[in-house]
Amino acid sequence: MFKTVLFPVDRSQESRQAAETVATLVKTHQSRLIILSVVEPREADAPAADAMASPEAVAELLQNAKKMFSQQGIEAEILEREGKPAFTICDVADDIAADLIIMGCRGLGLTHEGTDESVTNRVISLSPCPVLVVP
Image (cartoon, rainbow, N blue to C red; front, top):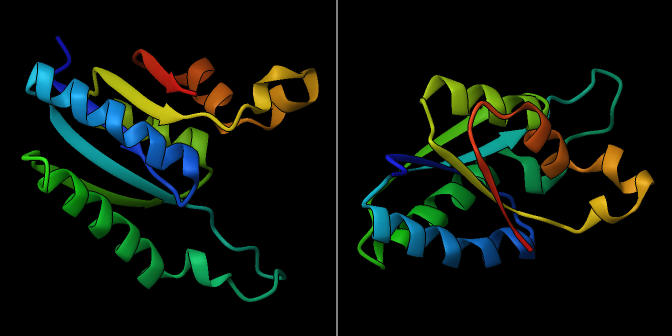
């Protein structure tokens, strides 16, 4: 049913918690797993990039995620993209013909103010495929 699953990751606790659901679903459906990290471009006048968004930190995040899935017998592909997270996630989902996006939720969508701020809510609105949000 879900041939290709896209799992956008960051360093959040919610992303780590969603990984268990991703592993279960990918094993159940024998899906192709794509792990994605999106780095927002730095504005020219912005201060130096934070160490968590350095190319090395992003590469480490992706390799650690791939290794974690590998230890569970799941082969995963990794992608790194630059751009606005919600738009980039949806673009990648479209490019790879994803059947499902699985992502963690920080709970920002519970208030009207949070709705506008949530990458998850934007992905839900723009996605070319179903989105599974893991609370």
